[in-house]
Image (tube, rainbow, N blue to C red; front, side, top):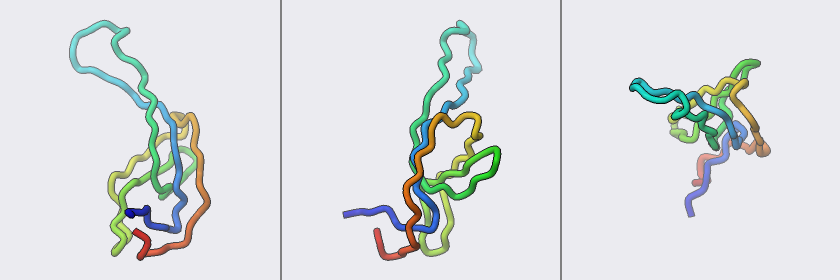
Length: 90
């Protein structure tokens, strides 16, 4: 069974609002503010934003699929307990 690697970063589940846009002509009511559900490792946090990644290269601890989300856009963030690094738990 494929398992998520245990890292020193906490795993979080986020619900946040994103911007919507269109470059074409249309009615102002066409656009809706989308709500995003996302899970990943919380790799950085400041007073203004959080950085989340759902992909990690274990051998050199490089993250991919990274998002920087302003805290003002976050509706909810649930954090699981931190886990110790474990390179063999796939």
